[in-house]
Length: 327
Ligand code: GLV
Ligand code: GLV
Image 1 (cartoon, rainbow, N blue to C red):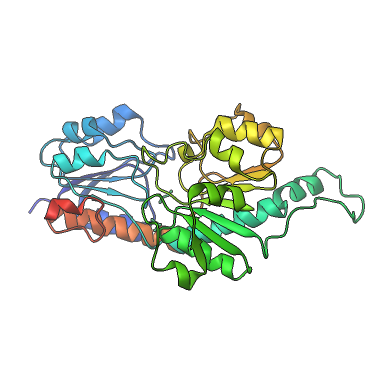
Image 2: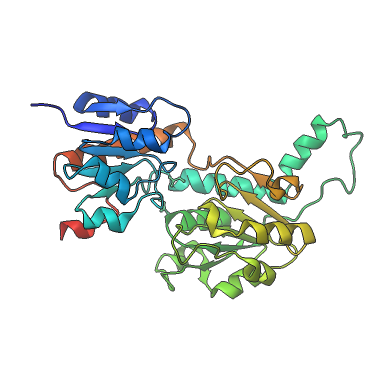
């Protein structure tokens, strides 16, 4: 029997790629950068499956050019805002993602950003390298305490909850606002209190964003939201760049309306080198690496391969974002 044809939009870890290569006739884009749109459109023609990364937009055009035999789209990410889900559902194509395995790894990184921003780790490193360290300074690079502070979580899904768990080890007070679930049954055990968005914004020392990107969460952290925050507030975003309005963030950081920001995701990605945000000292910007641990990226690759193969066989995907297809 001929092997199913798949297009893989980037090289993923061998743990998953080897499985894909074994069972499929795989056309794997070898570039370090995402395939240009025309290469993507050419590559998907006639395939049975697509293994995509969050850096490729998989919309109705891609699905239609692929053709009616397209059986599955497997995204190597937990987020799936790069894929037009309604278009996939309409065409009967299941879409897979990689939830769960990256939860703790991502929360570890969000907490690392929180601490690095509060305690000015990145500024300290730059200061040392610039030869400015002359003596121990009573007022050198002071920041707020992390322990005992209030952490406000915007989004209380798996990663938000993993943040609450970490915060409890630092004796932090944890408030959460979730756009969908108001009173989460897990909250009490995690020591987190439900609050409305305004309360979370106005009472937190740290505001960490953990919502998916949807039309409702785009620019959720805008000028109005930033204006409600305290001047000591530190904003952390490891979710998706467009949840935070970058122009408003720049103004708030520049004017001292809030103290600091730490972003792992930007809008767009990569952040343009002429972005005004890069002129500020009170911001840390990482290149979308929150899930980047060796073990987690391997597990994501295995899950993405498992979703792809299940879809090719016509079996339900182990982790499917449009399971209504199976009803
Ligand atoms: C990374 O951002 C992901 O969605 O997995
Ligand atoms: C991660 O697994 C999340 O969706 O919260």
